[in-house]
Image 1 (spheres, rainbow, N blue to C red):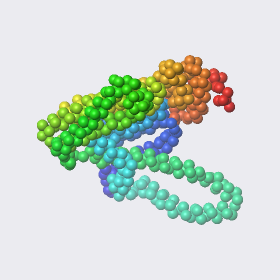
Image 2 (cartoon, rainbow, N blue to C red):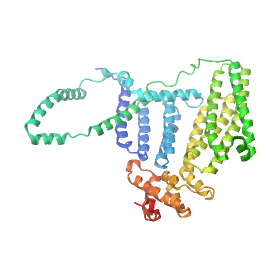
Image 3 (tube, rainbow, N blue to C red):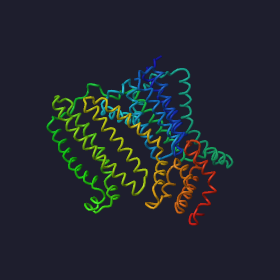
Image 4 (cartoon, rainbow, N blue to C red):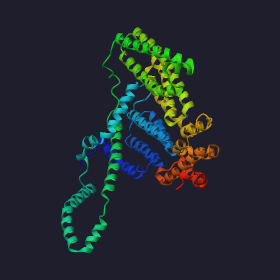
Length: 498
């Protein structure tokens, strides 16, 4: 009798967990928007990882505990907030945590890793999640090791018998259904299947189960991180890198000189130079500056990697050029944030403006951290700090409650400058509902009509939720809207009444 290897045993347990997670995902995640269901599935995934590690005595790094706790904390936001953009960022955050968790499950410490190793691990884990189930089934599990006697033999025999009987049953069943109407009706009712729905369930089950199987295969069976010494490859000298950075510094310097004139010259200079209002000036430049700012750190990180084998004086030259670029970048970021302030003053706050500003602040923090670590000869500290900063910004967004902040900011603007946009405010998530109901008597009549109509539509959407989509924000909004529905209907304008 053959002995089942540890690799096969681990592979079988991964497949079993994948089947359970596939069924759980099909049962829970079909309900949108995600709420309690997302947290429940992530908690089950973390529990499954913990069981596999304990069951097979996998040596993981100490980071595994806080990564699992961080994933649960981020997933709990699905039960707290309702803003769609926050749910998207939470999903991205969970994907990042799962990607770097592969390193921890391999026993690799996260601290002291280069940024490219984080990226490599994330890409490798994503690829493994999508395709890893196939080598898991075809190669990692040695099916010939499974016992062929006892209960397994009985199961196999029953499966073969059922397969042999299937065509025979079809033939005889067809004859009997043709011979008797009552029997045909009975068979038709017993096997009435909605094949579209069945196919949908199969697809969701297969996708969820396949992703879980592939992920655990990549994390527990196949190594993700390349060898620590495998850092050979392309390396350029200081001359091409310094020339490129010098030209970039020069471009930034010219732009900064122009920006300083506009920043301190005021609206008169902007209108005279470009024929634009201050609001138009802000709207046309902010997102371009965000993009330019986001490209600087990858540029400097790549340059630092290309010079990793250079002499100390060449490294010093690079750092000097990088410091100049970061200082110029600080002015560019200040210009971008000033443009956004002007834009908000003219048009009010919105989701894209709020999240873009948060992203710009994150970039500012990353730039400062890059200067403090990489440019001081400690590049291995940068990636982990950047990861922590990202989740700190995400946590800050949850604390400020973006949709409520948008409504609060727009309500605080004098109506004479720009009327309150009731339609947009009511289109936000359930996070904004309590504040809108409280402020309803204070806004003008047209805004009251728009808010009332929008909130009544939102109540209709919330009433269609089932328990899988439950979260605190939607439940609170649902209760408030139920209580305030008579007042909202009385506030409707005639054009909005049905």
